[in-house]
Image (cartoon, rainbow, N blue to C red; front, side, top):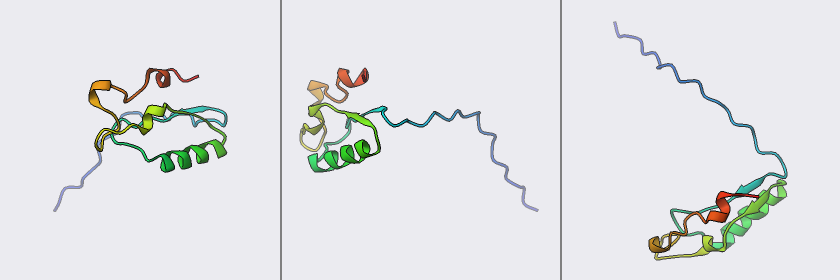
Amino acid sequence: MAAKLHPKPVAHMQKVKALKSGGTIGIVAPASDVREEDLLKGVSELREMGFRVQYSDSILARHYYFAFEIRTNQAVPENLCRLQ
């Protein structure tokens, strides 16, 4: 007879509160470049949902197929780390 498999107990998970309309969402793209058309479409949809949206113009920067040149360290601009 095969042994029954029981899932391991999961540590208590806390569910974060949902973002509320009027809240701010910061957009970063540390891994790959972003097409301006896609960015603006997403920003528009988030604004229609009632969110404020912040991003740095450097989000559109491109170094080969990366989002930024590693030497410039632009992945997460400091001003986005302190959303207002």
